[in-house]
Length: 404
Image (cartoon, rainbow, N blue to C red; front, side):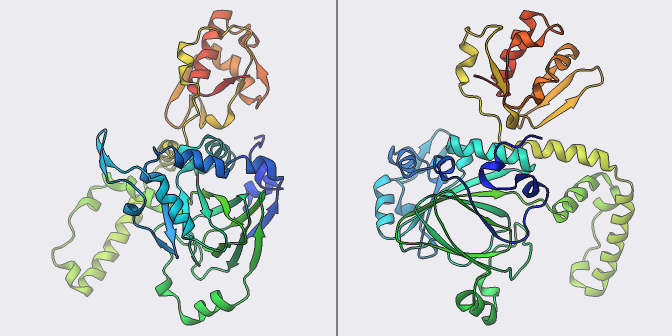
């Protein structure tokens, strides 16, 4: 696989992809491309128009979440549900007070970041999401905490100091959130007064890798800070084991009721636990790992971003000719499945495109062409001119190709 996006954020993308660093790391990348992902002017555009929904934003003040009512209009009926719209003036006031503003799910609301998330997802093989954090000078959002997923921090504006400490709870799962009350006094002393494993000041273009579980604490320096956090979804043997258990819902003995009263009698419950564990062992021995893998591939598809289908009005355009140059959009393709008849199914996160054998043969080479341009005429002699033009049109509308 040719990598296009990872080289923008890490110096050794092949190594990063095959073996993500187990400890935090900082890389100084060319600042201009990363700074263009999100600027203060971009934030003004998103917030200042007065149409941003409350679900796309949150605010943190002194380490605590600010109630939504402080920065939104009262909830009102919008389409089929009750929603709130962000008040831009309230956000300005909160920033003046030192609050951190968080733009959530940027993979859904800001195209440059969405494009980066699509590319990262394709190249690392797991869904990637993004939030942005705007912090006024000399302030911080969240204090010491860990995340249950690994993140890449990309600084786009200003500077921010980061202190990274070794995990107290290694490899937390998604439901194992940061719990300050569970830390002993020794842990707190280490976090507050001990020397961090890594301390660094990020400038525009700097990238910080924080593996899940590592404790971090960050604060803006003498100028406002804006950074993007790219979060990599965590897939673990624990997750896979839960999916395996879901395959057992057809096993009759596992659907039977437990004995009444067992949960009130420790001795009886121990016996019941042992019986169920034996039943699980027998049931799992009969599972088909190929069937499970196929199901999980299909179940994971919607977790990846669907292709960017702009312009959506391409269905109305009639100026595409056999000589029009196009290029494949590699990050839009989730999987290419070969069919028994020699055709192929191109699967995206939210749709699929089935090709007959001639079209599959004609497209075999261009599907691997990366960003190289080609045209419908290049699909001969497998397809005649009209057939080739129709295939190119379908690829553009599916988001699998773009005009160049």
